[in-house]
Length: 99
Image (cartoon, rainbow, N blue to C red):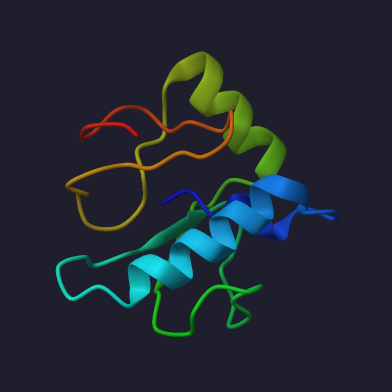
């Protein structure tokens, strides 16, 4: 799941959606959730459950958004996902079914 919205200065409604959905999915035994964001992930989860790993692109936010939009690169960092959930307009290149 693209969780980048949680690192925005004002996460807003999208951030609330990401936070609440991640908490709901983290309780499911049939789902292994990984958060995807720009920059370095660090240790702060910004409202995500601490059990949800966060992988980060090496690109900063503005460059990552532009690369995803125009170049359809880079791929989602980390292991290949079964499904990509992009709750905002920051949509990574399709490497799995996209929600």
